Length: 471
Image (cartoon, rainbow, N blue to C red; front, side, top):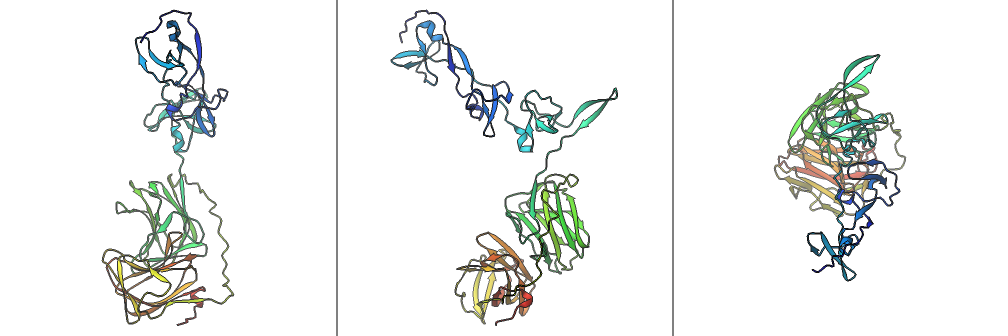
């Protein structure tokens, strides 16, 4: 490469800097006139669209190529040659020198936001260190210092009062988060499902009502379908029961259960808050009949907090109880006979079951589950849905049976009855407090492969107490 080495006067050229903050994961601000919120070793920072942005600057650069008789390239030109003077590009039919801008220093993001706090403004003093980083105190609350380093434990802070200096320990508490699992309505909140055992769950009197099998200490077990609840923390609930109730947490993956509290028999709702002394993560909260007497357990406002019971602050209005209408509808109930005696799957239904095979004998549907599969027949209504009401059926079985209703659209199901083994057919009529559903399930509750016989299955739009048998 030939260059004319003609010295000329050194001129200072003004070049617009590239967006220096992009390499740090942030866009540049739309204008150099955006107010400066913070300054660090990388540059000046502003906020636009609720996000940090780097404030662009005009940097003075020495166009070294002018000393050699050439212009400097426009920003972004790719280098095509390098010698002892620097990098060269080619523009407008001639060589040009490439000015290299200094690389910005890395900057920490606002790490405190994921802990529920803001970051401090520029110049805030560090008064506390923990495993997350350095903390300051502004506007009546803790704030994270972006440039602060990590430490451990608590920090001793000198406090001067009445000319005397004492030493105290400053403790920063992480703001808890809350998971509202059930309030006082007709179903669990979205993202939660009952994985209980040996119990039926309904929703009456603005409460979740758990009625356990009196022979097996049954429970409702509320599974978090979104993942784990957390690790440690606390549970808050309003509960009414005749006997004691066990509150437990459970890890499905680890198959571990830990009891966190016990409630006594209460004639009216009483609020309980329990700390969770369990080291692992858990995904189920269980409410178990501790007396084993099968009396109903009424629950309202079941809430999990990542904080302690002492610091629990209700995230919703727990004093609100919906008005319960006790009067029954005046319209006459409508009965739908799904099947009486059967020799094949009833018209208008499909079997969406699992872990079992179906046969027909003596006019009954015979369900033969596979051992260990907790198999079930799931009668899916091909067109339309049922809406609450009640179910009537005749059933005998070799083992315990869960009777459930399920909504395919909502991906929710509810156990409406738990039935013990019987050598002869028994008639059952149960209320369904669930809203709309399109599937009726008969499940091997113990997973032991015990056979189930069902016939005379009817749905009514009315209450079980008012059921007039059409069969």
